[in-house]
Image: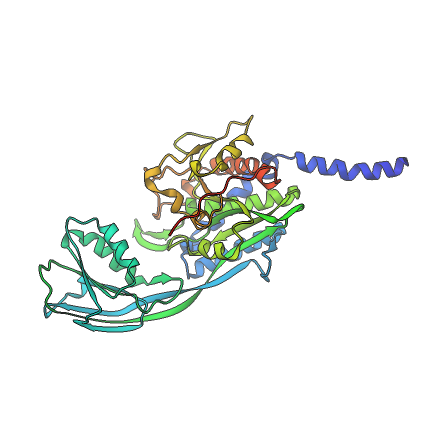
Length: 434
């Protein structure tokens, strides 16, 4: 062989080996992790609430990181925004009377898909009581799912629940589409018998834009098989002030997960050896109903989606100590064991979810894909049973352990390699029967 040619052929192979041999420790920088999460959780993001200027600013930052990294938009998208819309129904005025007695304004609230309605002993209105001995959450869920015009009489024992519902209703209810048949009026009070009732509602129904931020690295040999890395970039926004601070920065929830998604995109782009197509998505509207991931699930073929790494709250050490995280729904597939196998020889360990009573598997964005059979799991380190900063203004960058975040991201990078390379395919999860 020509000596000069031999050298030319050798150099690319040598370069590739060097890149492939590079470790997560070399390619995932703690300083970059800190930079990204500081930016996403800064006060000028205003807590990243859905439909606010703050979340728009966060979206633009994530888009800039994707562009610098060199991600491609998803097929069919002109840019990184996966756009859709939701319906928001906001009450303007609500009034009611029972047995010809006008109910005080503070004791009436409503949910409606219709812009206006008026009742007056209507035969098609069902009167339901949530009694003192009932389970409020169970009865409330039944009422919301009944798709009937309903007058709900709430026992005074549940005043605290009623006030929460009233506050949420005042801010507007978000749904995928308008349902004019949904007309529910809640009245707080003690009513032994209802002989007559009336109600009147006026509200505003509007379509509002939403968007996930999604990019991809096409697969080299299995481009029609997808691996998803995700986190949600929305949070609560401006909430009730504590010690003069009203910004719920959402540093752990979930700027930490979004930071992981960006870092993993950079990691796999540098390696550039993924057999399967990798999708990196920051979901919107998780905090108000997982709407971003629900839409994403309708845009991707679940059969071709072999795994989802959803990352939620990795800002502090888990209950198992440093170099550990837990996986929700660990027992539902062999996703966890595959990840742990790839970590042999390291100090990091993945554990089953230690908080089964919290039902975390269906409380994060992985649920949207798990429902359609994808091995979709959430990786977290949050001690949810004792986390006093959860959904508070104190969830700030200063409360985080950047070393823990960096170690967890590196562990996900290393543990995902056999799935990304196509060597391992997790068992599918039974579809959720609605």
